[in-house]
Image (cartoon, rainbow, N blue to C red; front, side, top):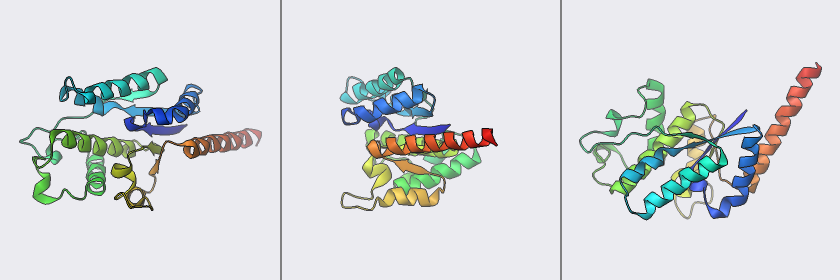
Length: 206
């Protein structure tokens, strides 16, 4: 089965048509859509804020769509380093996590990285969630990582027309496929599904 990891930033009115298509494919068991709701833990930090409302909306949308949900993130205390509080106590995951972190946020290196005190609380949590989400996707060998976060996973900067960050991720992790949630991606999913069905039918005939 084709597996899709859907970033919560895709729950946007602009993507309603594509989300509907994903919901149908998921319901028909042609694909499996997983939403990592690690960002839902942020609500503890953003009481009575727009951020909390946005996170609740993402959770409710994912639940209503029937997508597979998972929460796993851990918070980083001020007196701990990121490397001391990784989400998984597994060597392979930790290695992936550090590579993802380096590509996603190359500006944070050396001593600046130790406690995150140079970041606001919101940026600290957002970055950590992004690193954990993609690292877990790669660790679980899922097929497509779908996001509309241009700055975090696709482009190096606003003037980047070559999707350089996306290419760096896919170059580092040979099986990783990062996609935007758009009509082109929906067609790609359908084409892959049809090809897989054709291959299975040929196997049965033989």
